[in-house]
Length: 365
Image 1 (cartoon, helix red, strand yellow):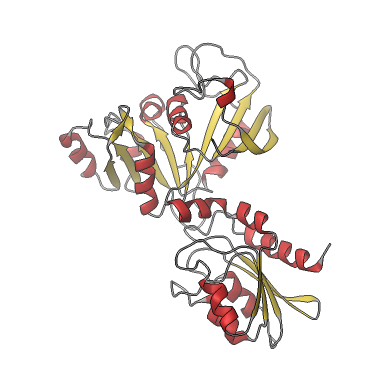
Image 2 (cartoon, rainbow, N blue to C red):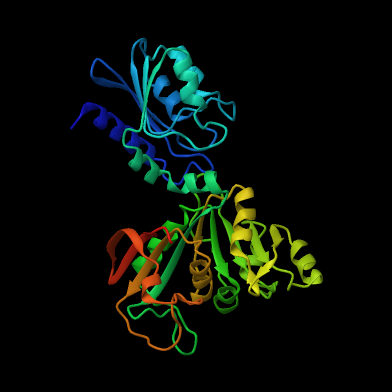
């Protein structure tokens, strides 16, 4: 293996140590090389902590004159919660920097590389770019579109059903899968369900805690029909609740919910009688929510599918047959088999007797 590839792979592995803990910042890793050996390592642990480049420089006790840095994302050149990394690199004595990919953040966007080159530092870009992009795909979607990265999670029988004829759905999947989901929730900024799930199951969505920050709960409810007595509303003081609704909700009811501490109601224009998910997600993005897990039933899953707003899908499949009408993904459905939603980078794993299938949506035509 080429040494340069080896060093950048090490930087990527360092970055991945902070997976889903750095939002709204990206995951970044850096290594410093001198004399053919790695002498410094660092990664961005969470928002507000040292950036990877700074952490790597601080990890070296001796001089850095003439050293080479490998970093997974372009060093910043602006002041935020931490000083500009580019200026620290310039002052350190490092003479060459290898960057896996440029940062599309308008505050950076080539400025870091330009600042380094202006001070005589040699900069190469593009080494293992595709891996760096895949690592930060959630941040990159957010920073380029303003929309959160959306993962839809469904628990279903092997024939694609999420409930029996009487509406019962607990528990289709096994105990180990439910334990897995609790850990999964801790990787997201927010958990989203639809109004039907709230009325049928009355969840609290408090299981699992975000490493380093709280998890918001989100409900999509076009007419604001969920009860004020629901667990989500009653626990809003301890965990924020955001409700997306439309003009179909009465002003009086909106006011009642807004008077509950911890509850925020966002009213958007309707689309086809429902909440415009794109408009709602845009509002959530403006609040700094980068990464959303959508749980709940077939209606909300179908809505995300119809509006082409799901980036990733996770299916927990139990070896059970239910039959009937309660499909895991509803909505309009595709017009023909030629229009199916295709997944890529598909992964399979077992969980007790269940099967977990996870994949990202291919770009649609």
